[in-house]
Structure formats: structure tokens, C-alpha cells
Image (tube, rainbow, N blue to C red; front, top):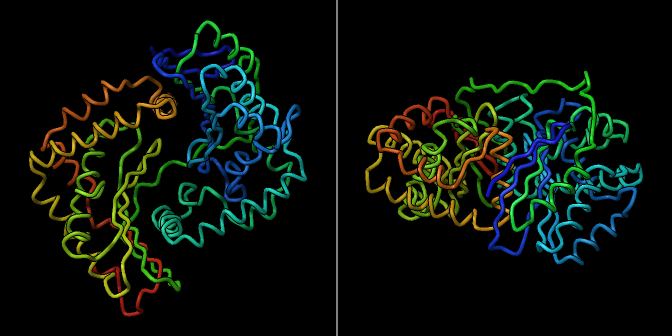
Amino acid sequence: MYKKIVLNNGVRVVLERMSSLKSIAIGIWTNVGSRDESIHESGYSHFIEHMMFKGTKRRSAGQISNEIDALGGEMNAFTTHEATAFYVKVLDQHVGHALDLLADLFHQSRFSSAEIEKEKQVILEEIRMVKDDPEDLVHELHGKDVLGLHPLGRPILGEPEVMTRLRRRDLLRYLQNQYHPEKTVVSIAGNFKLETLLPQLNTYFGGWSREQSSESPEATPWLSNASSCARVYRKRLEQVHLCMGLKGLPIGHPDRYTANVLNTILGGGVSSRLFQQLREKRGLAYTIYSHLSGFSDGGLLTIYAATRSEEVETVVQQVCKEIKKLCRRGVTEVELQRTKTQLKGNLMLGLEGTYGRMNKLAKNEMYQGRYVSLQEMIRGIERISVDDINQLSRQLLDINGLVVTALGPVAKGVTLTEIH
């Protein structure tokens, strides 16, 4: 059972009852992420996510942790380029307590100056952790190479110099400018009684009001004119880590199911063309995959691989060869049917639990403004034809726009710009 309710202040509540389960997942999603930040606010959205757990008017940080553990539940949060989410997952009998706890964090966090100073150091350590993880770091560098100065090209965690200068008043001003009822979705999936839950939701979220600030900037439009280029970042590592980027699709695009099938065929699993050709047949890489990144108004398709220094050129050449082959020769009916079955299985398994359903409800509401059933998604995958895949591959897999980022001990004689 799905239901959508819009509270008087504009907060949207989306609910899906799963009566056969004994758990419930509740998420508070705001349509605020790193792309909403100016260059001088880089990392503010993520910092606010951290600070929500550092104490409220009613609870200390320690009490917050103790309460969720006492319920046997899970509570966490995450920040993306376009959204920030706070969620809990508990047994259905604890829904009232969990909702009170989550709403308290969201509405009543204190943002104490002392806690902000401590959390700066935590986030600086988190940034350093990314710098020490070459797979994470090359993706971060690749974002800058593809999108340049666009906010989507900046790291979600922020820049160290911005974090160092951050003050409480800056954070509260950003919160006031960006966090509003009409940009908020409360997403709930699991076993609940609607007649009990609705009054609680009105109590916790119905009275929240905040005027839109004139300082709140419009999100910078997507830049789709990235041209082919290659950048090398030399670092003392055992391997060279590569990201190769092409144009993708917006998250709600009509061809999104076709794009997912195309990505899966190219590099989305162990049976994919890139994995089979570069790892299984040639032994060029242990890890190689492709993935889609969809945003509200654009998207990327990114291929990642890690290889030894002397094989960098070969890996990029082989990736380009597989892309060209996919565009020229297309896919077979057998390959398409196998991939459809794979995607449908992954989709159904991912939506068996309350957390997966809660995420899906929120994303569908934020990006499409409507409920998308599992049956609709399955039908969207099933109706894809070989011609659909071949047409989209020619549209997206244009290596004349390929952006290559290499991190590691790349030999000085290697010129990646001439490879593809």
C-alpha cells in the first residue's frame, strides 16, 4: 500500500506499508546537497549532516547513540550532490520512539561552537582518508576533470581550507537558506498503522515553518559540453588508477532503464564485456567496472580500472576498443535477455527490505514527483529492445568526448590524449 500526503507547510510524506515485515525505515530527505553550495561553502551540506548527531536541546550526543542502540536499531545519514538524508531503521514496535528521536535531531540540533570545532577535525580526517584511498581519490579528481568549476565537480566532503575557516554563524546561515519544508520529503516503509502514524507526523513536521531566504541561490545548470581530455596525477602507488568518463542521462530520463541495461552490458558485473575482456581474457586488471551517476538535469557514465604502470596505455586502448565494438556491432538478443534477467533480479532483491524501499520512495518523489511501482520498473526493463540499446549506445558512447583521469606512477612518456 502506497500513500502520499502533503502537510500544510509543504512537507511531503510518502509511505509504503509492508505488513509482512516486523521493521520500519524512516528517512528525512532534503533536496540540498553539495551542488547548492558556493565555492566558499564547499562541504557545508555534509558538515550539517554530521552536526545533526552532536546534541539537541533534549539529548546529548551520547544519549542519541545510547537510545538508538537500546532500540536495537540503526541510525545514520548521508550527503550526495543533490540531497541530504537522515534515517532510522527499527522494529515496528519502536516507531514512535524512533520518529521522536529522528525529528529531534532534524529540528532541534544545537550546533554548539565547541562541537563544531571538534567536528572540523573529524571531517578533515575524513578528507585525508579519501586522499589515502586511490579509488576514491581518482573518482574525486575525475569529477573535477569532467565538470571543472561546476559545483557537481567539487567533492561532497568539501575543501580543507573551507573547513578550517568555517564558523557557526556560516553554518546556521546556510541551514536557514537551504532547509525548507517544501524541499523536504519524509519517506517511510515497513509495518505501521496509518491512523497512528499520521498524527505523529503532523506533530513532528506539520508545524515547521521557514520563509525562503533571498540569499538562497539557484542551482547551477548542468554543463553538457565537456570535451575530450586526459589528466595525469602522479603519485607513489603500486598501481595506476583510471577513470574514463562519458556522457550519461538525468536520473529521471525516459531512457534510464535502457541506460542501466547498456551500462550493465558494458561494465556492470562479472559477465560484462569490460570485465570479461580486460580481466578474464587479458589479465590487465583485477578491478574494472562501469557505473552511472544520474543528477536532476544531467549524468555521467564512468569506467574505473586499476592496473600496473606499464599497462596503462593498453587498458585505455582496450576500453576504447570495447566501446567502439559495442557501438558498431551492437548487442545480441541473448546478451540483452541475460542482462534484463540480471537487472530484474538485482532490483527485486534490493527492494525486499524496508531500507531499500524507503530510499526508492524518497528518490522517486524528489526526482520524479510520483510513485514508481516495482511492476512499472520491471515493465520498463522488459520492453527494452536490441534497437533501443544500439541507438542509445551510439548516442552516449562517443569516445570523442572521453575524459581520462589517471592517478599513480604513470610513466612520463605516456600520452593518454593520443590513445583514444
